[in-house]
Length: 388
Image (tube, rainbow, N blue to C red; front, side):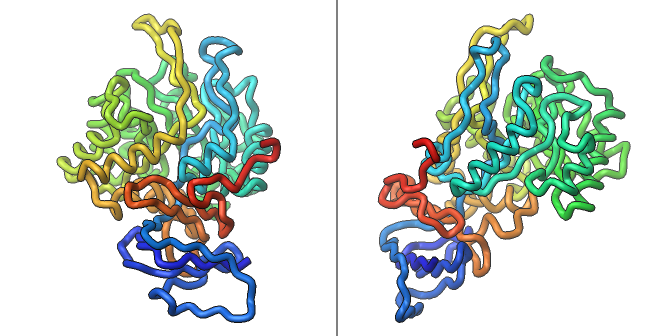
């Protein structure tokens, strides 16, 4: 399949100016000045990207593709994600995970859902396990899961500092991080231990102990929901300054700080603390429930997270002059690609996977190319789920 995108303003994420992009068999074949690419005698798909901005597709590293929730009983289980929701949110690659419920949802179902989404067009990976330690795996070993199961990129989301966690000891946590490290090395993967951080007082205590009491580097683990509170974000910034990465969770309302610092204020605090933005990723927690508990831990209600939060926050960062476009792109694309070792993702460069977003001048999503296939064009969905 040959696709030629003409005349868009390309950010790779670095600004390249107005370019034509040739896509061959799902890869970027060439990036050239307008009208320099000549193809004769072959059928091609042509997209006119004049007045459009072209950026790498978003990589969402925390998605409950089977649905999360259940903290209020079986009727509060969130629904599975659909490929239409993914495409319309600008996501081209995702990592699926289980959450609180590792009993009525299973690793086999998670893997099947990930494979189904990939058949429909999305690049997918999964974390092995759920909130609890010991981790429920495919092979009875996190290390073997990483070595033998292609889609397994790490373990998680393991709950820490949360009343819903399995309350693991430090020794159990360190042993799991070691399994991720060695399994990742032997499997040729990042082997990341992805850690849900709750509202408890211990915050990132386990992670700081890991990098001071063991030989495991801080880049082997990542805390998510790190903007849950001002105090937790402060510890997250300290973790970055010691060489680690953190993941921020996006709210659908970019100004909403009812559940902790917004993405915008979190980034501003990182800038003020001189924490490198290259060590920050942003994820959606999509299709996971957002339960509300009282001071005694009693369930009060819930809402559901959505991937649409990513584009809302991306636009907000740029429109409010918090970050220039090329730096904002890195939070949503390049940084997770680098951290999770997705070597063909996160950049618009020759030989990379053709995962592109076309934005209008107001930064609204107008088109999407996923693995070289047109998923959205002129704001209309083309890629759809099997039962749509």
